[in-house]
Image 1: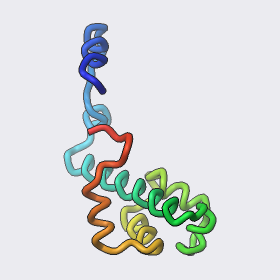
Image 2: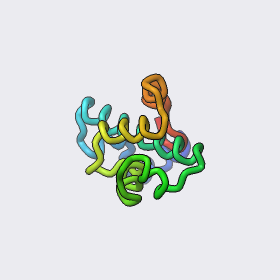
Image 3: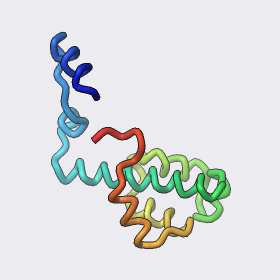
Length: 110
Protein backbone atom coordinates (compact mmCIF):
# COMPACT_ATOMS: atom_id res chain seq x y z
CA UNK A 1 0.00 0.00 0.00
CA UNK A 2 1.37 3.38 -0.88
CA UNK A 3 2.04 5.85 1.93
CA UNK A 4 -0.52 8.41 0.68
CA UNK A 5 -3.35 5.89 0.79
CA UNK A 6 -2.19 4.65 4.19
CA UNK A 7 -2.21 8.19 5.62
CA UNK A 8 -5.73 8.81 4.26
CA UNK A 9 -7.04 5.61 5.83
CA UNK A 10 -5.37 6.33 9.16
CA UNK A 11 -6.79 9.88 9.12
CA UNK A 12 -10.28 8.35 8.84
CA UNK A 13 -9.64 6.14 11.86
CA UNK A 14 -8.53 2.94 10.13
CA UNK A 15 -5.66 0.97 11.58
CA UNK A 16 -3.19 -0.25 8.97
CA UNK A 17 -1.01 -3.27 9.59
CA UNK A 18 0.21 -6.50 8.12
CA UNK A 19 -1.80 -9.62 7.40
CA UNK A 20 0.17 -11.41 10.12
CA UNK A 21 -0.83 -8.74 12.66
CA UNK A 22 -4.48 -8.91 11.58
CA UNK A 23 -4.56 -12.71 11.88
CA UNK A 24 -2.49 -12.76 15.06
CA UNK A 25 0.17 -15.00 13.55
CA UNK A 26 3.43 -15.71 15.27
CA UNK A 27 6.57 -14.99 13.23
CA UNK A 28 6.95 -18.75 12.62
CA UNK A 29 3.35 -19.08 11.40
CA UNK A 30 3.75 -16.05 9.14
CA UNK A 31 6.93 -17.55 7.65
CA UNK A 32 5.16 -20.82 6.87
CA UNK A 33 2.26 -19.01 5.21
CA UNK A 34 4.74 -16.99 3.14
CA UNK A 35 6.56 -20.19 2.08
CA UNK A 36 3.28 -21.83 1.03
CA UNK A 37 2.36 -18.78 -1.03
CA UNK A 38 5.73 -18.68 -2.76
CA UNK A 39 5.63 -22.40 -3.56
CA UNK A 40 2.05 -22.26 -4.83
CA UNK A 41 2.87 -19.31 -7.10
CA UNK A 42 5.94 -21.18 -8.36
CA UNK A 43 3.81 -24.24 -9.11
CA UNK A 44 1.37 -22.21 -11.18
CA UNK A 45 4.20 -20.40 -12.96
CA UNK A 46 5.94 -23.69 -13.81
CA UNK A 47 2.70 -25.29 -15.03
CA UNK A 48 1.83 -22.37 -17.28
CA UNK A 49 5.42 -22.08 -18.55
CA UNK A 50 5.18 -25.73 -19.59
CA UNK A 51 1.90 -24.96 -21.36
CA UNK A 52 0.00 -27.46 -19.23
CA UNK A 53 -3.61 -27.26 -18.15
CA UNK A 54 -4.46 -28.11 -14.57
CA UNK A 55 -5.84 -31.42 -15.87
CA UNK A 56 -2.55 -32.27 -17.62
CA UNK A 57 -0.54 -31.24 -14.54
CA UNK A 58 -2.81 -33.39 -12.37
CA UNK A 59 -2.04 -36.42 -14.54
CA UNK A 60 1.68 -35.85 -14.03
CA UNK A 61 1.12 -35.56 -10.28
CA UNK A 62 -1.20 -38.55 -10.12
CA UNK A 63 -3.89 -36.30 -8.71
CA UNK A 64 -7.02 -34.43 -9.74
CA UNK A 65 -7.57 -31.05 -11.38
CA UNK A 66 -9.35 -29.79 -8.28
CA UNK A 67 -6.34 -30.73 -6.14
CA UNK A 68 -4.00 -28.85 -8.48
CA UNK A 69 -6.31 -25.82 -8.23
CA UNK A 70 -6.12 -26.03 -4.43
CA UNK A 71 -2.34 -26.34 -4.60
CA UNK A 72 -2.09 -23.25 -6.79
CA UNK A 73 -4.38 -21.35 -4.42
CA UNK A 74 -2.30 -22.37 -1.36
CA UNK A 75 -5.43 -23.88 0.16
CA UNK A 76 -5.05 -24.62 3.86
CA UNK A 77 -5.53 -28.35 3.14
CA UNK A 78 -2.38 -28.38 1.00
CA UNK A 79 0.93 -29.10 2.71
CA UNK A 80 4.29 -27.62 1.84
CA UNK A 81 5.41 -31.20 1.18
CA UNK A 82 2.70 -31.61 -1.48
CA UNK A 83 3.64 -28.32 -3.13
CA UNK A 84 7.28 -29.42 -3.35
CA UNK A 85 6.24 -32.83 -4.72
CA UNK A 86 4.15 -31.03 -7.33
CA UNK A 87 7.04 -28.81 -8.36
CA UNK A 88 9.37 -31.80 -8.66
CA UNK A 89 6.78 -33.72 -10.70
CA UNK A 90 6.77 -30.78 -13.11
CA UNK A 91 10.54 -30.89 -13.45
CA UNK A 92 11.76 -28.55 -10.72
CA UNK A 93 15.17 -29.22 -9.20
CA UNK A 94 16.04 -28.61 -5.54
CA UNK A 95 17.73 -25.42 -6.73
CA UNK A 96 14.48 -24.31 -8.42
CA UNK A 97 12.53 -24.94 -5.21
CA UNK A 98 15.05 -22.92 -3.20
CA UNK A 99 14.88 -20.11 -5.74
CA UNK A 100 11.07 -20.11 -5.52
CA UNK A 101 11.29 -19.72 -1.75
CA UNK A 102 13.55 -16.69 -2.17
CA UNK A 103 11.36 -14.87 -4.70
CA UNK A 104 8.36 -12.82 -3.70
CA UNK A 105 5.41 -13.66 -5.97
CA UNK A 106 4.21 -10.87 -8.27
CA UNK A 107 1.36 -8.91 -6.75
CA UNK A 108 2.20 -9.85 -3.17
CA UNK A 109 3.08 -6.92 -0.94
CA UNK A 110 6.21 -6.86 1.17
